[in-house]
Image 1 (tube, one colour):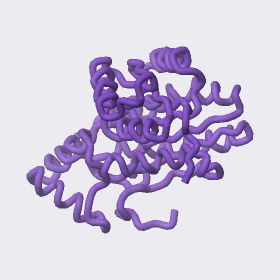
Image 2 (tube, rainbow, N blue to C red; image 1 turned 135 degrees about the horizontal axis):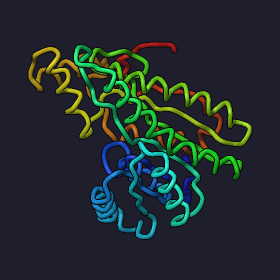
Image 3 (cartoon, helix red, strand yellow; image 1 turned 180 degrees about the vertical axis):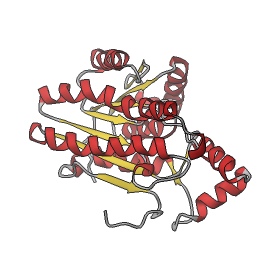
Amino acid sequence: MQLNLNDKHVLITGGSKGIGLACAIAFLQEGSKVTLVSRRLDNLKQAKENLLQQLPQCQGKIAIASADLRDAQSARQAFETAVSQSGPIDILVNSAGAAKRTPAPELTPAHWQDAMQAKFFTYINMIDPVIKHMDQRKQGVIVNVIGAGGKTASAVHIAGGSANAALMLATAGLAAAYGRSGIRVVGVNPGPTMTERLDEGLQAVCRMENISMQDALKRMTDRIPMGRLAEAHEVANAVVFLASSQASYISGVNINMDGVATASVV
């Protein structure tokens, strides 16, 4: 299948680790050029070095830009840097930010505010300049890696899940608003995935249920009919397909990738 992604400029937030980094690898393998955005410059430099070791043929196709995506101006500066370094943005993949998992009895208003800043606004602050840039060009794709917690409530992820649900609504709404401009907006909702962020979620479960990390991981896995957690590259493969011309009529949807943990027709 020809995905027609060669030389497309892909801006990836949260691109230095986890699913974002896996997306970078997948797009580079398809011939795209990528700009990785993350808060810490040292992580970005290390990610670029690792990518070039793995894919030496991609020399000149990897750019980096550090930004605190909670701050709208910082996000805009990263966007402008990306355009100046590598040209107009064809695809935005949002994978930055994650609200801390907090057992319900520990929640305070500050936790709710932090969850929205960490997950919702880190996406919106980059979407805003990028989608207006795409609107001028009358083309573009945005893929938001959101999370299954926005569809199924968890006692340790209520605040973060609420931010995810807000992003799902924004995804559908922006797709409708910009569809006539040739812009597609899609959401992907991974369930538990084998990345660095997994431990934080397990620790919250441990505190709430007074169990060990090993038991928490087993319980999490046992709830998944497919019998295992997702791998980052599996999520990345879905993102790359959705961003490609082969998915040209898919927009305004939020697709679950949770191993059938939520068996639903919605």
